[in-house]
Length: 114
Image (cartoon, rainbow, N blue to C red; front, side, top):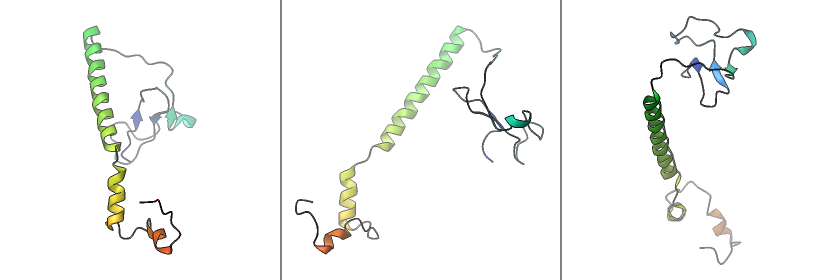
């Protein structure tokens, strides 16, 4: 219900034009496209009006690249994991409901595993 009723993707493929939900007040109720094209479609031709001069377009492209750079940097920072800290947490009993180290109790463990 929170997805946009009409959305054009960056690749112009699998764009959305749905019949909408009860909360959509952007368009009149009913399908935006005829019959079989009720949900997804690809854009073959796109005509854009009033985007400004070359300087405005370049400024928009630069702003988008800055935004993508910040988003990528944030995503990489969040994805970085200190596996040693996880191991120390599990060994300390922090995750006491975990059975990760239960195999150590049965005597059939590798002697070189620490």
